[in-house]
Length: 400
Image (tube, rainbow, N blue to C red):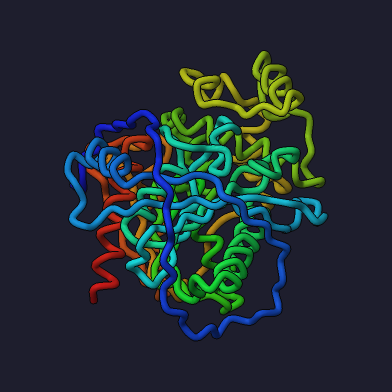
């Protein structure tokens, strides 16, 4: 068992100004041939006393490290949209008052079902920006992107767990922050830890793949919690067992995302969904809404999806759909950087067997990967214990 997570969030209080002290610059071996237009503005200031209370409420005890004031800056940068057009995107750079650690944390957030809770639109509250601020308060410069489709890019749909768009926007965000940190003589983004939960877990590993291909940033370790890494296996398991209905919300978002993005799919929703759900989901899409888990709670696989679609997946006759899903799988990959996967023991969004298979596959290819179970926690409640344990792991890593 890791740590307890009562899930306590306190109200916003007045915050004090934070003056950030730069750390000594390290030699920068990165290529400077990746210019990105960057605009940084002050976003918010997190007071250490508030963050200490949030840690206490969610961890059940104070952390054995100092908690610092944190300044949040909104980063607007240029990347590419899913149709390869120049596009502004956004994220947040969090800088502690006293930067005690000379490595960077990149935190990739879980699925957002309320666009107003994108990191660059958030302040205090039960949101992903607050979790990133807790990480930063322990002495680390911390980065959290919005993802394409949120914040500054909210006029385009977010493609849920779509490998190409997540990698593109998050990789460009890294470069944008790298440029900002160098220009302002704060530090250089040479070494980083990547951590992510839910959608961010998947995003972490696909971004690691990209970085290991380009060799332009050094990842020390990746920590991923509550993620679905092999989509093909996840979908087949969902249709075969029909038990893991808590995963339906994620799968429906995934299905809509891929159907919208891949022209070789682009089928009517009536192919995938039975009535009245096909009409209800189409209405949500047309209104640029985001499907919430509650909309499919209590519905079985056979009630929601058409027999034609289910049979096409299980009998492998819907080749086009299966090929699209496979393109977004994390498979046949030997990572160069160590990975730790986490999962709550009561998680009904991700299956233990599927997570363990990902671990075994990477081990067989010679990759360094470990698994940590979070006892007694479901998908939602495991997120805080995941974050606190990762802080401990990174602190111990740096100490050694």
